[in-house]
Length: 463
Image 1: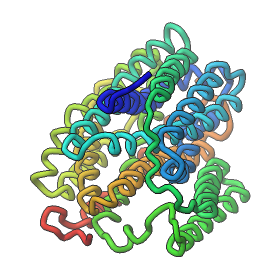
Image 2: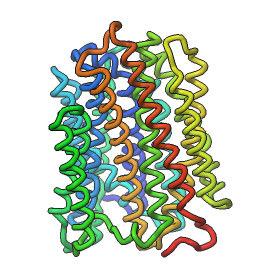
Image 3: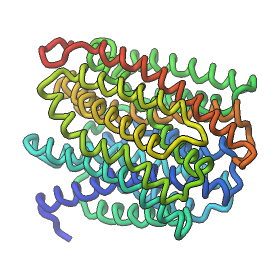
């Protein structure tokens, strides 16, 4: 089958847009299905949090190393292999007979996911000329928001009427379609062929993240403290190693020599850390404490992403005219207010109150996200766009992972390893309120990181 260059561009735009939709759709749909999964596989609150965390942890551990290998050996083949791994792992999720099987399948799914979204944007940028780049990245970002928006709603309907496994069936079919289309693309795009791969850095990085997150879930045992300590030590060794490496996975000098880039990324890490667990917790709250159905829950959780989708383009345009540090920081202030309001949830809280909190968080996230990405990309020269883009993705995943790590830590200490039942819903509520308080505090710190980046538009960023 012969494909013209124009056709090739269309195929790349199609597969990358579908894959940009796929991960947020699946994540937000699975969040609504969590109580049904817990009931079906006899899971505790702690093991249930691993259903979300295992995917993110595996993706975070492998995103940068796999992206680097794709640059060396060919992005297209890594994209196709990623699609295959993702689809096969999703099929295993459908067939999961036990909680451990599901968590393991989700981890493999995370590796496949990292191969897809670690190479997709780079393929897209390589295929289109500079003057069309903004438009096609805009289409990709829109696909992310569509996935986030319809995920809770469709996930709720599928869970209620057909069962939670149908979410994974829908995702597997879409994964297979993406993989089949991707195989027809001719280009390989190996950008840095022949350059070395930092294997020891990759292993240090992966071990550090795994030790910290697994350690958090094992607290308050002594083994957990040892694991966290080992993880922090490996993270320090990784940073030292990267500064000396000939072919570093992460360009640490970009962080050390560029204040705007460093603080904008720190703000992104903190913002994702402060917001990611909210949907997970509210899904449990609405179904276990307010006793709503999965489809009712999905209809409520859709509030935040709808607001994000509507306001993000506006916030992005505003950041071209005004300083991103002020728009993003305003977004973070609104996020803090939304998180503080969630601390006051109880079994009698009205649904309107929850809805209002979600809308506030949606406005906060929209005002933060687009201007912050704009600030990161504006803080570097064109030759660093690929590195900056990969760094943004890593900050997002790492923030999401630590958000779930905090959730698991609180669940481990307050709820323990017991199934969620009517007898301990008060402990679930206590845990959720405590997590919201921690996240609100973390987000407060993020406001200062966002303000500390300095001005972008007047050339104060240190290229």
